[in-house]
Length: 118
Image 1 (cartoon, rainbow, N blue to C red):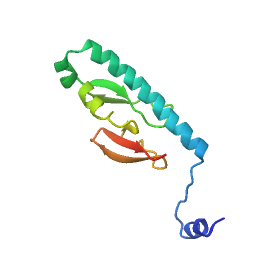
Image 2 (tube, rainbow, N blue to C red):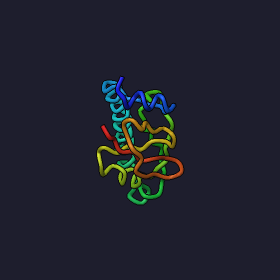
Image 3 (cartoon, rainbow, N blue to C red):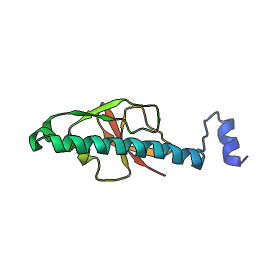
């Protein structure tokens, strides 16, 4: 055990090193949900007028790392696209963050925008 780990344990602090394989799996889960949302966006964009794309909220799925999460996030197509400028950004529900692989960079009361750190 390293001196840093020992000191942190002695101080009663949680020390967590995420296994690289686990971190990659969590990221892959988020990428899968992101692909689902891209499909939803494509269908909705093709069926909505430009005005409706700005005004009508639709259900997207939370893009968190929990493969069993199917919580909904309501956004307009235009809002959704504005968060897609960076491929390392994901839209997740509040409190669904995994700090070991991402950091919060924005959001609202209903969702958080996170950026991958791995």
